[in-house]
Image (cartoon, rainbow, N blue to C red; front, side, top):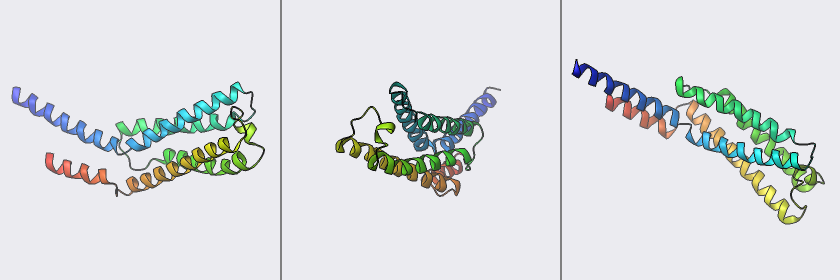
Length: 167
């Protein structure tokens, strides 16, 4: 009986390890999601304090990010390569960042979008840099999600090697 219990504990440990490895394929996605969420939260709060009517932009982005986060949590219980809402989320973030580049930096809308910044070249360059970083991060995550979907990511090979080793 003692050996059966040990064998069962060992089997459960191996299953949990494999489950965690599949979940960790999305680790970068979760970190970037958190970065976007807190960036948009800061922007949202700043717009509210400035009485800007454009507060809905970061609010919508935060809602989309929360939906993506819920999907990420569900992945832990039921592994899937297809993360539809997360893909939509980062597509929306990519498009939003791209669309904000022109009005934020090259029109008079800068003051409405970022009323907490002074409309100077330095501020516009900072905002432009942040928006370009957002475009690049969104593109990177969409690329990563595509690799995971097709099991072409490095983690998948490691998982398969580990599964072969423990079985």
